[in-house]
Length: 123
Image (tube, rainbow, N blue to C red):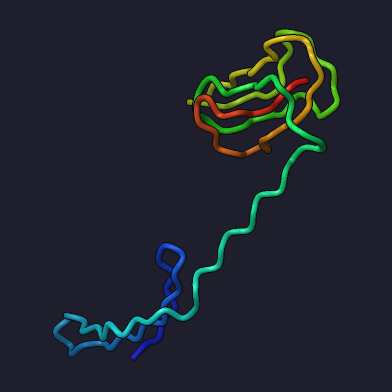
């Protein structure tokens, strides 16, 4: 017999498996019982100092955050690159839609984002 600990959809199970005869067909004793209640994922910490601004800067396409060009508190002009998203091996700049000050950066480099996701906000 072999003991395994398996996690399925956040539930942890201890499983005992018996090995069968030499016919090659394993015989499993499905004695799976939850070990502990699943732990809730920790809440994501805000990545920006202060409150979000009123102007949202959204991803135009799904991809991965490649680079963050601006920082919280930085003044930007309309058309300035705030975040660069990589999609299908292309770097897509996401620009400020108007002049303002960066109020929050809501993503980190390496984050996967969907089209329309808020990447940053401006005041």
